[in-house]
Length: 121
Image 1: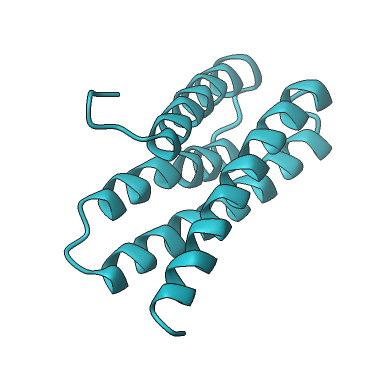
Image 2 (image 1 turned 60 degrees about the vertical axis):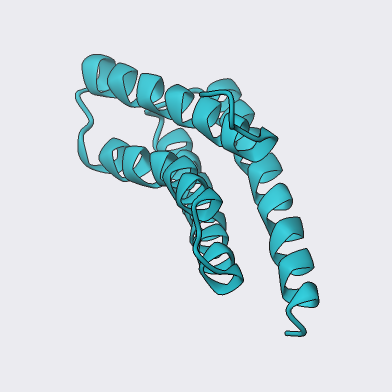
């Protein structure tokens, strides 16, 4: 991404690229536009909110943006499961991306837990 990036930013950006490629493939091969568009929106929003968190102007702003990114990762998993279970994407492909979204979720949850403990909440 850039020289000032961090592991979460790098991972969420790489994940977003995979989601974009999957979206393009599902639209091209399956002609599916609604579910895949939801996946695209949620899956790319994770990295966008992590980027915003990195530019936060306060601890509360940082926590809010990471919280949104965390929720978007949960939503992304929902859309991946739905696309898999409706046979638009393979189980193998879905499960790999679900595992990556889980990893991102765990990192963000840990960050949220730590930031809230440090803020006395």
